[in-house]
Amino acid sequence: MNKTALHNAHINLGAKMVNFSDWEMPISYTSLIEEHHAVRNGAGIFDVSHMSVFDFNGGDQVAFFERIFANDIKKISNDNKAIYGALLNEKGGILDDLIIYHAGDKFRLVSNCSTREQNRQWYEKHAVEFGVEVVERSDMGILAIQGPDAFNKILSIKEMNPQVKNLPSFGCMFDGDKLYARTGYTGEDGLELIVPSRDISQLWDQALSLGCVPIGLGARDTLRLEAGLNLYGNDMTIDNHPYESNLGWTIDMTDQNRQFIGKEALLSIDQTKSQKIVGIILRDKGVLRAGYEINHDRGKGLVLSGSYSPTLQSSIGLARVDQGYPKHGKVMIRNKVLNIDFVSPRFLERGKISK
Amino acid sequence: MNDVPADLKFLSSHEWARVESDGTITIGISDHAQDLLGDIVFVELPEVGQLVDAESDAAIVESVKAASDVYSPLSGEVIEVNSLLEDQPEIINSSPYEDGWFYKLNPSDMGEFDNLLSPEDYIDVCED
Image (cartoon, rainbow over all chains, first blue to last red; front, side, top):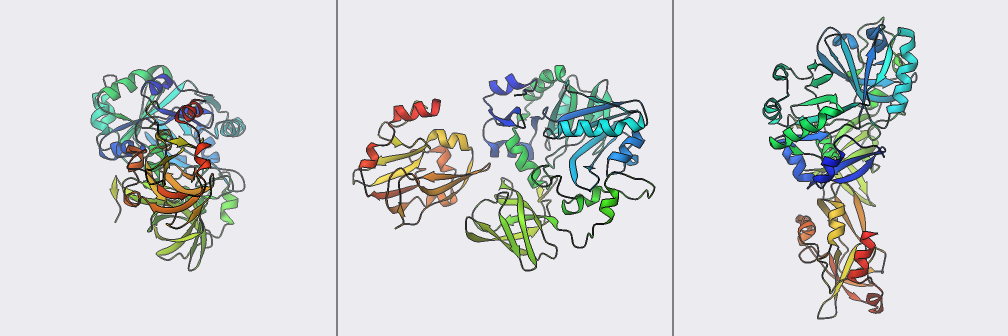
């Protein structure tokens, strides 16, 4: 099994370790709920070094990304920013969701762990035509420091480049081979540090000594769910197109001359008939889980992700449902019919419960 | 793991049973089980009057991460459920052997109690 550079640190903190796509990762250190609140109310630090990091050399990288990425790379290619979007196959199926960072004259890409091999082959296959070399950075690790107090802690880290405080949301900068980006997967302010693995331990230890709370993948999941952020493999797979996966906003066809992979297939989809991902809140006691069936007055659906929300103190989920859903619906849990409300998937806005 | 109460007996699936002075049986899940599950947020208990069979599912416990079946160590009729768990399921995390009990039953076959694992044998199962 693969281990991150912080494996011993996790063990020494008493973390419960689980197999996550063949990586031995911390699921929680103390209590998942306490870790969740630590991020909402203060600052938490995550080791997410299992995710895949790619750099690119030479060739026409802008044209390469214009071709393989469904969002338009030109939004950031003259800026120091990150952009979120999907990698599609020719049928418009989602191969993965990812973030591409651009700062100075360099691109760096971070995508999911379970899709590493598929993506590397996909990038390499399509990079040839643009003369681009794909470099997998398995020597990189990733830390995320997230929460309302995250930036105070970050700026107290000795090695930290003080210019990070000027980064806007989704802004990023290189400091040598280190990339700092004001991005995250929690719905909170914070920084992601994509840095050489040899530098990780020192950053981690300092962040902990400054009061950042170590957070496992368990709370990472409840945090992202409250923020309405999709999880690849749960909320969308290769069998889903972006319009039925809440990713329509990342499909950029403004530049009519841009021929990205999957575009033709997407043009043939009638968006008015597509299912949609919606947020659901359980109004009875219980816990929503993936796979539960949903019914509403005008159709049906399926729970994609479900859990207990420590902030809302009730069960929430993401579901893919037929369009025309009213405010209320039903979910089947172990042969019982329970009540749900359909809401925006963004249960929280900047850590506060959405109205 | 070493402070498992000596008067309990166990299923290898982590449920415990205790014989009370009036001959009824109290049932719950072990400290090891609550630790594996993590923060418990919901419990579905059997109905009072319901007949349960040994080693068949009688309750459901849900942590933030997942739902798990709870198997009855003994057969019998459910005579009481722990209604505290409805609003404070986290009691199972803090007091798995006392306040966090699940239900009580009138056993139909006390021979089943003798077949359960002793605390020592249960600890061995957990350490395997």
